[in-house]
Image (tube, rainbow, N blue to C red; front, side, top):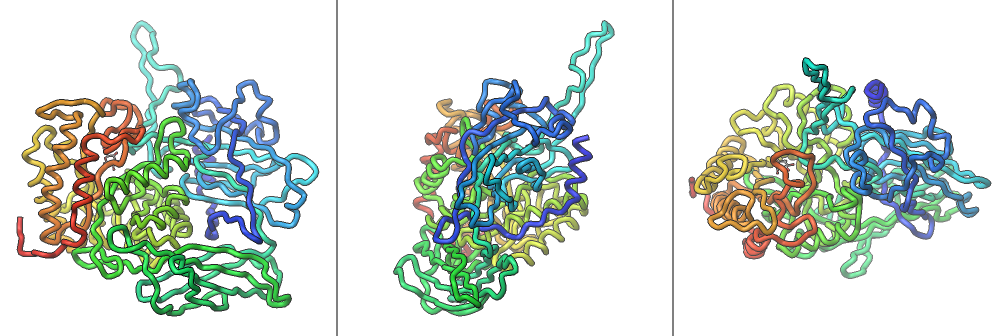
Length: 626
Ligand code: BDP
């Protein structure tokens, strides 16, 4: 039944109008509803007991099995109950609050920054909307009760199936011995997700009660280039309140000078002598602030204000390199995860800040939001720190290239772009990680999505992260640049260190030769269990991870020098949790850091490399053939 419900809901197109980050200022306010929410778990893979019995109409705290769950956090690792950790299916959250009298002056919205995977939102007993996919924000307007409690109820389902992105496989198992002994309990199934990270679920990022003016600034699109060309588009919810206009001021956050003043809900202008946003190591990550005053033309009064930080910079792609502000940008990067002990993928400013500090400590200038868009707070921090980011839509391990899946994928792409398009740090969109891109159905499927992405944002290149081979891949030629994941010395030729350098050189050189596009080695590395010391090295020892890195780096230096490599991203910044498998000893250990962010031996090797790597080398000596 859940499967049917799921499909029906997929068919309802989720209308996302663009979504701005919550802001508290002279005209808009919010309450952050984070804290302890009432939590009830349905039986594993239940057909939807809660929906059938209308749990949104009752007080969940009265249930015998009710407990509390911190928001934001994944629920999986908070209890001692293995059934909570490994839950598949519905869980319910509830939160009650009294509205303040002053709230009558505002329009109010519930904003969810990330609920994974599928969420039904009820407010004061009514279904007000749903969202599918996790990792991206959504909001619904609500009318508050002023004389009684307000009650938010959320039903969350983490089920992964063929109809979801990323996909998972349900395998129902039965086995009865001749004696009549049944091995598996009735209804037993194994769920194998098509990805290598723990499927943390629940309310993963903050929940807000937004308080916005009756007419308000709804959407903002900024494009700002290295030559000072600047355009903005403001979309307003007028609430039928007549003729609205906007006063605009752009201020340099470096000099604190106003560099532009204007009027209008949109404009295309050129601003002279702007300070550019640059990635770390290429100059300062200078930011500007666009301040919008929404004006009612009749009364000439300000009715809303929104301020957004942005940067002037240009991203271009040649056959060989990615250029930021017309300079070759070489990505010294990391694949990462939003992952930590206890709160799983739940947003935590401590972990986020530590992670970005560790990227900087190792001399990195770049990361990919593998394998889903990270928190909005992280994108603002990347802007401020000058870390260049490839933002990836949640579409890992794609195998089923059907129309309904494509529609969902397209929706996620558009939500991601609407959320992140004003961030200068985001320099490219990744549409998938390791899809089965060697089939012609994949080609048609991705061709549409690439066109869609370009039409939604013409200022950034589009890429995908491939693990196919240059000889069989069917999408690489449609991308602006190509990301390749490969694990020589780990998944291929384990233990044969002497093959690693030539394997990378040989393969990447062919990708380059065939497609004549910039190539980023987007994942490489090896697992190392922290403290496991073996010399000569053996797989899983810290020395082995170092040995793999050193040999890969030798190849990357060679490839860079002849213009065949535009960047490298080690997999992974830190160890992270995965599903259980015989190749995972309590998670994936390819981190440069442990899961608690302590450096392994490899971290020092990478730090030395990133700190000493010249910024611009590409294309110096093109005659340098392998
Ligand atoms: C790559 C995947 C990544 C995995 C990694 C690994 O993109 O999600 O964690 O392999 O196996 O193929 O460590």
